Length: 129
Image (cartoon, rainbow, N blue to C red; front, side, top):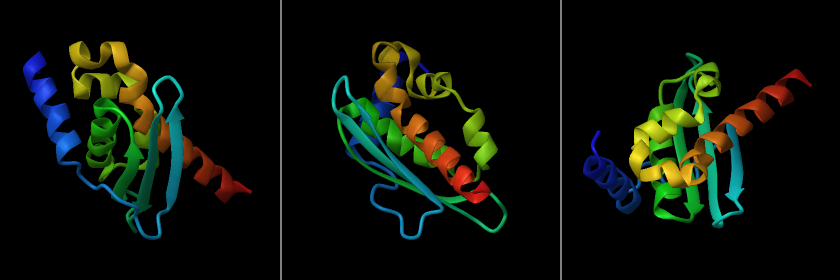
């Protein structure tokens, strides 16, 4: 993806977010803040009967990159297992959003993934207790 394609993708998801809003009866949810710039993201996921993420959504406030990343993360999460999400790393989001565009803002780009992973870990921990 070239620089302009990455910018267009980010702006499209920022201006036309996918899956924005609270998800009713989520399996797992969590919230995170980027103290560096004040971004806030709350991620929600619901598992289907097949053990895969059947629904994902987000709420948040913040910069263009963090909010676009949250929108993109909801699309990437669909159909994945918890293990699939936990195996993803920040480089996945940086590459998806366009390395050249977000390299200086990696915390903004990775915040939604970090929140989703933490919410999955907390859910898994509560199931073991």
